[in-house]
Image 1 (tube, rainbow, N blue to C red):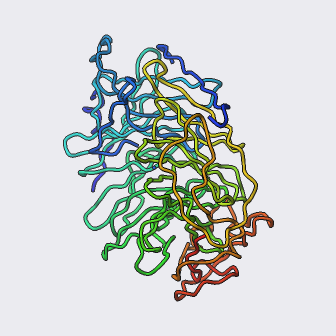
Image 2 (image 1 turned 180 degrees about the vertical axis):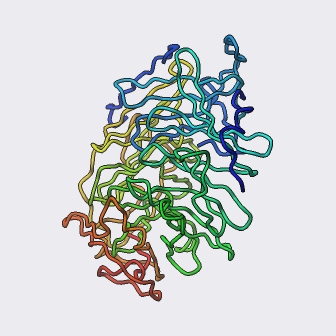
Image 3 (image 1 turned 90 degrees about the horizontal axis):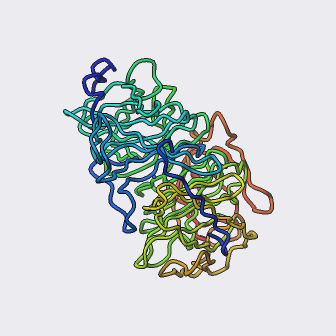
Length: 480
């Protein structure tokens, strides 16, 4: 794998609502007006007749978003082809959201990847001639400015989620049996190799606000998937982050740097289930029934920030998919029921933003409103004690109206030290990652929630269910 400097890229530079309280903010389409598009999966058109577009990738602080869009039949501009694919930047932190189209001299390909930076520029990753070319595009008067950054050779490149500091961008590049981790934006000169990680890596979540600790899902030579952490400023040496049982496949879905809340997916309970834990905590990974409804698919898409030391209070936005369609739900570790919300027309599925105050924002785009943002006032239910005998139940469809509260089943409560555990297996959230530069591994939740302080510990043998805090490496799987 070799990097091409910006000079060699020059020849390609010219290429192509709760109880009625939801408030829709309309973006104005004037001329001035973030789990990136994956390769091989071109964006699809919405049924409401809006512009064809890909998923919206949002910066860590929620100020900017970017996606790839196509408006077939658009009038051509001087020096540019009409219609086709181009990047679109969304500004989301003002009184009203608005979008700025960023068409280049030639249309983009449908598999072009986009990622916004904190300064408003948008990173493009284009594939051409067996290489992936990186450029920064930005508004420059009536035109689109473009700054080539270089290229990487290879058949596949995957941009990682935006870095919390907003000034850098990383990518994963398969390299034989290993995976190369590259700094593709923010380096001194062109793409820079951070390190090679044994095995095949995917996913990506940042564990600290400084943007040093990166969590990845790694598939080893034995085919088992486990999450590892990489310090991008210390050579990229991987260290184990999550291992629930010796033979389980454990993936990290979401991570919140402020509270340490982790959302995971594991087959340790017998089938793939969504669970939660706290980085560096003594408590086990728990698999609440609320996150395992019958006949529905759940995808965690956003975690409420700013809840330092309060992981049980963090709101988690969920994308719900079932026979009746898609909608949004909210869950917190301290509650055992989901709160369901009808999404706005034209919602960009998989995209949601939280404010630290608990407001959930859902971006949407329609033919009449190409850039919109629905704001949901999500109430925080009182903490609920665990039920002595949880029974699973699932809702078969989305709510009728703006919002409703549905009893999906009992979920893991922060007072789960008194709850029963249904299976026996060792779990591990490595303390190596909890030594984050921006948070303490010994963070504890409020005493009323019953969370235990964090700590370190070595991996132990599978243990029977216990009712006292023990290191995660020695803890059973708990279902509450």
